[in-house]
Length: 164
Image (cartoon, rainbow, N blue to C red; front, side, top):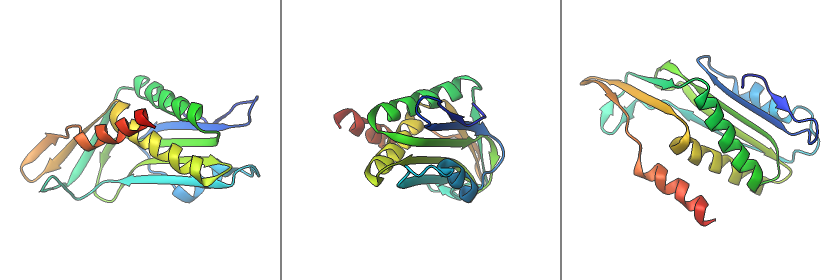
């Protein structure tokens, strides 16, 4: 999905994008609120490329994905969050392609009437994105290229939602 969708029955915005281009955080958050007076809280998370990972310098990280499958997986994650919390807007932007240290990788933002729902939903989406979205990361280090393995801490973060 590359176009924001506001469902006619609820007026709730869902915007999911997988793209190479960078994003403007301020503009994206303003669009999420888009004059909706019901929104009392917007919580966002921005992930960036680190210059050091697992003890090695990172010169570049390349993110690959499977078009169509990735967007569907992100949509499923957002649907799960919407089933748990009364969200008024959800935005997920994930970049792909070559990225340098300090570049923005991902933006997850949730709008709700109250901060508790917005915080919880944002964290939930990010935790599930790290484990369930089909992205593959390859880092360029002084020792050469290497694929980044999944982290046990990401699986642990996801498990806490099954208990909640």
